[in-house]
Image (cartoon, rainbow, N blue to C red):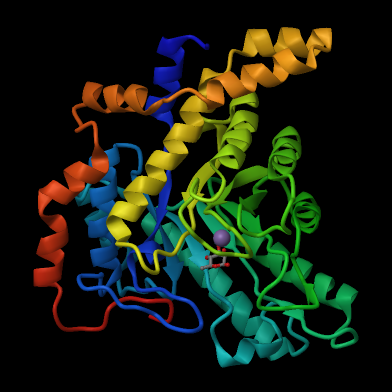
Length: 388
Ligand code: RM4
Ligand code: MN
């Protein structure tokens, strides 16, 4: 097992970012089951995110999605978040929910639509300036449904042009994170379907363009930790959108479907020395809690990431390196499995107590009365959701 003081120090520094949209109502294309007490505004989402940080101590930022989190005064929103003990994190652009985007956004054949999408992306950088956010996250629903529908290479050229304009607009401390997704909503050819496409664009842009790995955006069976290792090696891993999938982009709680995969991913991160905030890898959640209560689900998700991280930190790197060097396949694998099979919950509970938190964050939240309070107080108005 690794040095316990070092393990604890690393866990204390590690941070997870929460998605504002996880607190609003979401569902499938069949039905959205609304929950009582969900936030109506970005301000109330920040209040809920602050609860997750209050009980976990490791989730001090909330990503926003524009225009879902549109407000008059973004500086005031950042100030409100700061009063709540958190900050506004990554700004997510949304160029997939307007009628104009039927054939794409920045890859659309019509220059008018491309310009509209580009204007939105640039406005998102204005939002970053106001909130003090460091990262712009771009995910494009762009793609085609049928062979021949549009010119694949021309679409890449349009994409590259838009990205270059946005990149040039970034301040020195701001970064662009380019996310990829295999399919959906486009079913024939997505314009940024994989890490290779994202990486090529990032490399053409410059050092402030980095790849985001959403764990739900791959074909079944894909070795995600291999992608993570390669991106870390290239210095181009900007961050994660963590979630779980059984089938497609299920957006379930991270660590629920495959905690072993999450451990393997975190092992690559730990090995590369990329766990600490200074390493520049953003550990974000991108989830939807369609049937479970949202705030405790976010707390649980943060804990799941912590557990996988703690296990990865517990791997005895000396034993592992020696076994690898000797070609001792079983011993090398055992070094990983010994750590994975360790129950790290007491370690994490102890760590929480050391920083003045309750050892059981979900229980503490449930006893706090916050859930009942928001159900009683948040009456009237429209609950936040994907379209608002
Ligand atoms: C997309 C992608 C983005 C997220 C939206 C809500 O599939 O994962 O990261 O912002 O969903
Ligand atoms: Mn995502």
